[in-house]
Structures are given as structure tokens and as C-alpha cells.
Image 1: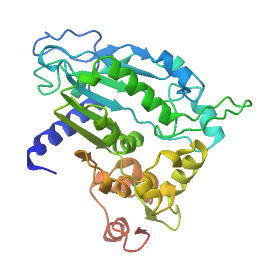
Image 2 (image 1 turned 90 degrees about the horizontal axis):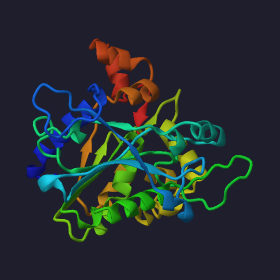
Image 3 (image 1 turned 180 degrees about the vertical axis):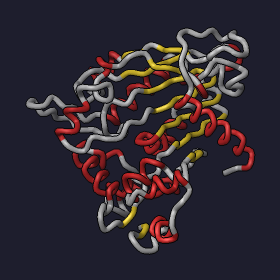
Length: 322
């Protein structure tokens, strides 16, 4: 990464952490002073015309996002965040998911904006007056699905790739096409599409001076564990098969390896042309607890790992990284 980008990365790390932990207050004004809570709720925007394009959530409802307009000198600057939320890998998972706000826009409530989405100049000096967009995740396939047919028995739709296109098209018409600066970001399960679509996003903004992307906690362990095997490789294989994702994955990757392996960001990042940033904990708590296993996460948090546990975590005995 370029040296001049270090400050931005640090700001994003801190701000994204704040987004997860700060408390909320409704309808805050941009002019609130020091000492006030700067969190506020933003109503959802339904992309109604997406339905005619087949760009729908798991339950067939139109996709949605939350937009807070920029102001002042930030009116032509945009930050777009693709929300995380794991995946659904089989019909049962997806049916259950379609009955929640991770599978239906009908169940989505106003979303809280804070941290890097705050309108407080003191709290968020670099982005406080930018256009801020939180794109809701309702397809269960990291915005990669594209299957035309719908099973009448389940009414499940796998159209995540179309959702991404429909949402961005809607935002372009609302001023994104005239962006001066833009950031496409994604967290966890949707750190991957922030990378996958980064160059395409950049190409849609010919007037922009700077376009960059951010992958937040989007890298997942490929580990050979005798007890858990390759958890994410198996998961991604199911996702790619169920959602029909292979057609939207980079041909530069799928020509070299199995489609599910192209769901790992490290296997496509070398082909990116747009600058991007990566934010990733060395000890991602979910992955350590659920993939590495052996209760190592508890010992890491307590700072009392034994030598054998350290060796296991480093892959010397229990498992090895691929």
C-alpha cells in the first residue's frame, strides 16, 4: 500500500470499531456540539424497479439500502458499505434466512449510523459530510448469486449479483455518477464482493478523482484440521453451487482453480487494478473459536496459552494452513 494511505487505513479501523460499539440517539443534527451522542437512525430506501430486473432478496422482495445525503464540500463524496451477515448454503438455511431481515426487505427496520457514518465533524472529521450508504444484505450469497429459475415450492431467489447492480444503478442516478471521491467497502461475508466488484465500481465513475475499496474482516482461514477439515472451502463450495455464483467470479481465477477457491479474496486480489485496503484482525474471534477450535480463543483472550496450544495455533501439530 502507498505510504500516504496509512492514515486513512487507521481512521477506517478505528471508525469501523466505533460503529460496532457506540450507543444510539435518534435524528441528530449535523451541528450538534461536543458531548452529544452523534448516532442517528436512517430509514430504508426500497429499490422498487429492481424487481422488474429480477434483482430481489431471497423471498422475492426488492432490495434496500439506507442513504444519508452529503452536504457542504462533501456533497460529491461517497462511502458505500455492504453489510455482512454470513451465508446460507442449503435450502433449509435460506428458507430460515428469508424470514428475517437478512433475506427480506419487508422486515428491515431503520438502521443506526455512527462512527465513520457520523455527521459529527469532531468525531468523524474526514467523512462527516459525505454521502453515506449502508447496503442491506438479503441474498445470503455475498452478492454473487444469479439463477434465473425459482423453485415454486420454496419461492427462494438467488439473485445477489443482480442486487448489487440494481443498487449501484439506483445510486448512480441519485448523484453517485458525479462522485469526486468514492469508497466501496464491505465487512465479513461482504468484504469479498467489495473486492470482487471493486474495478467494476471504479469504471462506473469516470468523473471521480479517487476511487478505492476496503475489505474489512473479509479473509477466511483455509486450514487442514483433522476435526473440522476445510470448513470455509466446504462452505464456499455449497454457496457457489446453490447460488450459481461461478458465472460472476473472475475468469482469471476460475480458469486456474475450483470456483469455491475463488471465493477466498487472496486468490483474486492480484488481478485488481483499483487501490484497496484490508482491515483484518490477527486473531479473528469467530474464526479462532469456530475454525481453529480446541478452545484456543479462550486462552488467547486470557493471555495464557500453553506451548502446545501456541504450536497448534501456528499449525505445527493439530492442523496446517493450505
